Image 1 (tube, rainbow, N blue to C red):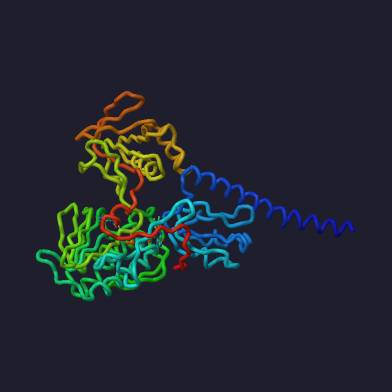
Image 2: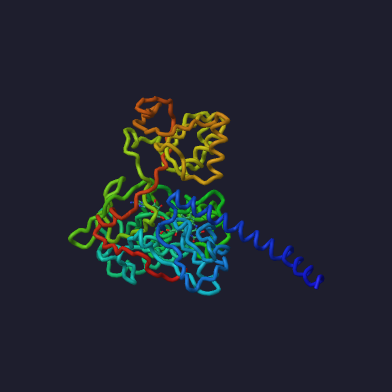
Length: 436
Ligand SMILES: Cc1cc2nc3c(=O)[nH]c(=O)nc-3n(C[C@H](O)[C@H](O)[C@H](O)COP(=O)(O)OP(=O)(O)OC[C@H]3O[C@@H](n4cnc5c(N)ncnc54)[C@H](O)[C@@H]3O)c2cc1C
């Protein structure tokens, strides 16, 4: 009997107890992540998200492990739970990993509807001659965007009106993976094409964290060799740039499209910050992430204001103001503060920074403590001048020397722009889609 009890005790101590403790630790971590996601407003999806069938889920956690973006799902109370919905990009790895088929990918949630343009199987919208490809059409992922960009070009060539005078056959709006692939394919098919990109070519890929491994099924850009799913963000950007340059694609960066007008003869005029472009066909490949939100203060249109930080080293010995209260703002401010001689101020209108990840909060606190960064909470940027900025704090205006301003105030969704083009949108509150 004693021997039996001893064996049971050994089993309990060696196997059951560690497993129980690990389980408790994981459950605590999952709850913490849920709290953080709630505070940071990450519980609603940008577009796609997993939906869990509670009746089928047995809490194996395989979906959590399989997700390449991590932290989207967590196991809580023995069930897979959607925690950081806004981090989901639609890999569908969770759906494939689930042993009980308890997961599906859906658009939107009951709280946040997602607007998807009405598009036919030929990628044509309800506006004849205006096509849609890539993530804007609802299906995320690079390989899908590339494939759709090329397929849409194949369709839009059919029966197109003559090239308008002084214009081109095709204007592609958006220079992400879908827009670049479409532009390259159109060139190969002998069309005259111009790709208009408000930022820089590469689309959402440019905004991935540094050195992120791009997870993708193999795909091929027109005229290039196959790309596998184990390249870094930087390698993919290099590959996109090389493809554009070698093909001589007319990709215009820093050009924002504000409107598209249909002409009586069936052609279009695309209104852009670089002027009007007449064309026979329009392909919208603007993604779903939107345009950086502006602050609306005086001087914001000047060249020294940017909405993204690519090379912090360029700001050595400069006075830099970063505006925003999320992870992007804090990450930018801290990396600038590490640059030799940079004088960095982080301005946020709220009384406390609650959204950034704990690791970012810690890095920020260290930089402030070391005197490398000034944090101005409760401050509002009033005016951006040539060599200075003025901010209001507690009713008092403070003027700071300034060479550069970085604004991280979130994004404006493309909904209004799409509606202005005449495209019909359908709002989805959890519509089921197939995993990619
Ligand atoms: C953090 C993160 C990680 C991801 N990781 C992966 C991954 O590992 N693997 C994967 O397959 N997918 C991943 N994705 C998803 C993938 O990046 C997107 O599905 C893909 O980039 C969609 O391509 P797109 O060309 O349709 O749109 P986008 O890449 O969003 O490009 C749209 C472009 O249009 C431009 N634009 C918008 N409006 C206008 C306008 N009015 N005028 C001019 N230009 C305009 C934008 O500036 C942008 O450059 C990730 C996404 C994110 C956010």
